[in-house]
Picture 1 (cartoon, rainbow, N blue to C red):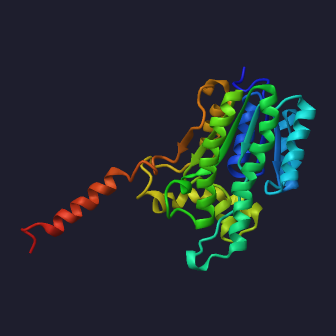
Picture 2: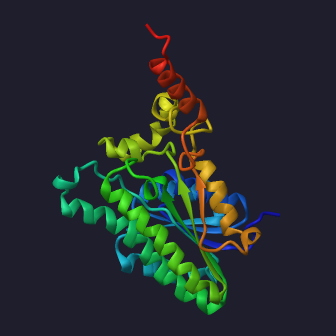
Picture 3: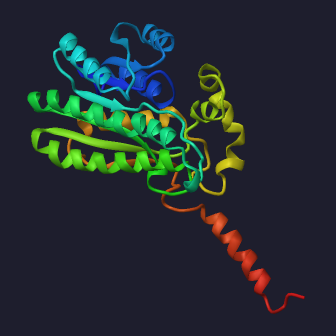
Length: 283
């Protein structure tokens, strides 16, 4: 028995990274899963890998009609919609505020913010009618802490956090829960894509970032190991399940402690260094 037995789930952004890990975890937990994303070849391969419990539909999350059609088709095929995961993403831009390209900014917002809004809007209609459902929006520590990504990505993720809370207090009265998972620095292909790599190459080589984790995150993340997509998928699966039936409007943070504060060893080391500099015995 799986914790998602008899559940019907749609995962938007399922062709790589966190979304793909969520799709795999959902199928393992017993759900029927509709995978959605822009790369048809990748989506078809993943659906074939997952077997009869999964199928793929090409969708651009930034296009409302695409998302509407996806969710309507899922309901027509399965008769209900129990779970929606909004995990579509594109790299942001590290532009200075004074130099922001507004067209690029809007493109990031279209996927990361409006893509989530599209899913919420059209899933809510079905879930309200059936009196149940769980919606999980995948966001980022960038939405709560400045300096971890560009202004476009950060603003979109912060907006989704508040959109999640707003939807939760409204839809909760209809038996529909809306939560988010706030992910830290997860080893996915989005870093390589942002650097200009071919998406397939970026996805294939993402795990190699583990080798540079100590240099990249050692001074910031108290739990000293890389965050993998499966770590986030486990949290999403719990929020999707009936085990979290009274959790609503919550942001479950999976960042190794980054948002809580720096590793204490780093702070102690800096304090010791300062004490040494200020010591009256220093020659």
